[in-house]
Length: 294
Image (cartoon, rainbow, N blue to C red; front, side):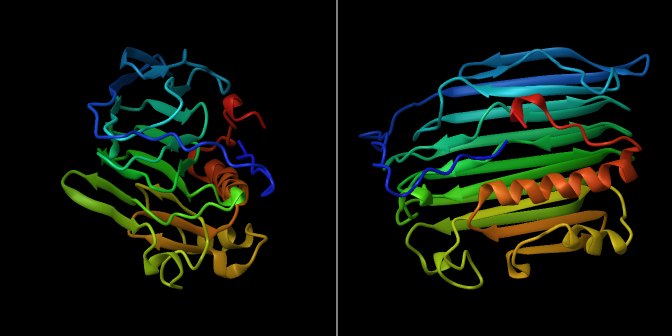
């Protein structure tokens, strides 16, 4: 699952660009999972290029359905608009990831957009664990995620963004990224998180922004009240500088934050937290998706 970081002396790849705004790809994905006889099965899955779903996989047995989203175009450019809708029926359990890191290429025109709506019925459980997104210098990117939880439903989710291909010396000097995540239960907000970064702005260097670091990430468990000792347990799993991470309790959940230089280090910490807490939450060990290759 680690993002390969190339040496700085490697010649930069050409920047994919779009000369002017285009209609772009308007891809979509819809997945419906239900619980039947103690197992979770997809009853409907529809995709429109460039999005695709691999066949469901059951490394933990029939109870948890693992699904992998593939973006066949290899990356997003200006004007692309992708929509993902996932619905979990009552008591169903799913883990959804992506086949590879996403790339948002430079484009001076329209923004690339990714919109996800996740709806969980009563006592459903979803782990939403996409691989990182690399935002190239000069790109315009909008991502929104809305999660609707019915009573008893529980959601894990993480998001990792790398601004510029920093291992090649690239910084995010131009462009804009906006990210908006909402988790609701029956019309009541459980967690709202909005972020905006302008390329070349003071936020890149400010200690209240990126502090000259290229990677930011969030990992949240939302849907149940967690004991205070889980915060200290999650912090203790981080082996780097203490200023690079933060852990706090939500009204109904736990939130881990990362700001640093390494996507791999952030992922390793998120996975360690997940592996520690999942047995406490679901009485079963965490199962690493095979597509991560670890």
